[in-house]
Image 1 (cartoon, rainbow, N blue to C red):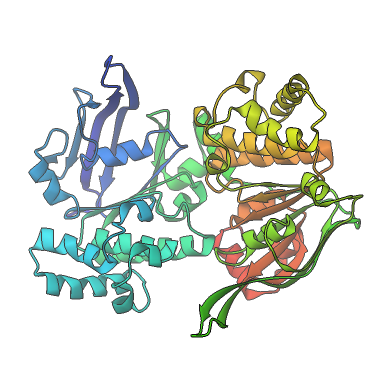
Image 2: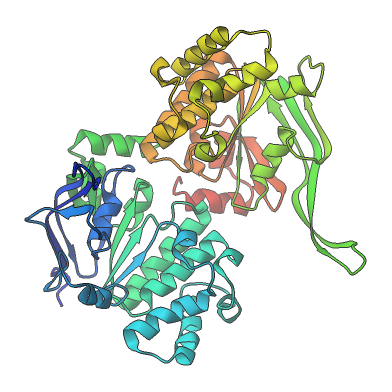
Length: 530
């Protein structure tokens, strides 16, 4: 087959969803047409809600039911086989056979009740009619091929016993089990650390070469797509707004939306502030968790989540704390907020009468605002809760006035006061979480992965908002993230953590241009910033 021959052809794909009652349709994908050629990597980029995943699911007929309506002229052909309207039996032979699919969240896609080796073996039994014993042995080989160390032991593990990166490798092993012609990867690295992302991308490219596969790589991370894609499709509100060769898209974007995406993904370095006034200090902070006890209950094995950390935080600056999952970043943040017990000392150099005053002056914004916002309370109640605790003398009207004011500060409207969290987008919910922290006028705000779950354009908006608020209100930030681009965009100083320790700490400029530790250099290289 020629490398220029199309093995997947999509013409005029339109997908609508009806509510099943009044048959009112929401059109998620509108007149999408493209080709996938043999041996190429096609990147599909766009924000959440742009139609990327709906398009991908349509390629295998994975959208089903009475509420899904395809356009009359919609056509998806894999080779000569029409997917739209094909019998389920024909589709089953294609799914996992000719076409492999890697889903965004492996924990939701893997069966928690079965060991991962059995789940990989299952696809071999279905498509190759392989006996289960032989399939289990082949599954071990596939797990090894997907980069899992000690695959025989890991094949006997349940999904919850594996890390995020390992679970994603299990999904990859399943998707390549039957040597597919096409591999569809839907946001396969979104929830992973930057170094694990790099490993997964490298693995996919090695497998592409070994199996001579074509890959559709779906992501909102443009820098990641740029690294591996031959061509790129840009989607917005269900339509393709631009498509072309990767370098043409990045060097000569034609559409305004494409330009905005590229600009948002290129986080510029923050102009650092020079100040020597310490507002907060951690002195020999440690926290341990028992991992194993002997017969008499004595702890014989410990996890040092934070190991003897000392660091200064300077007034009006942003300290970025960066590292992989499990490095101790979030645990250190909780220690600095005095939300968990620890050994050592955390001092805030402000006039403080009691612990209640400390917790007013040091606020925290968590990674997932949907889980940290009470779904039973409206926004006025959620944001005003801190005032009710710290300023009990205020009347309800006064609290609501202050809530309306802080909502305007973070770019929301007074009309949002009586809405509930589920009525907002992810970016809006993060703005609500920031407003909740700021309303009590803190001196230090700890931001724990505040942008990791957001699209690149929304990430850029939140970072610009935080910079603006910091300048106007003269606040100090502690910004915790594994995203080196976000860290670079907002930080004055950076502390790099690994295994509960601070490996190195310096100005942002020195960290990115003159890093001393190999671990730091690896993080920067993986983030493609140098």
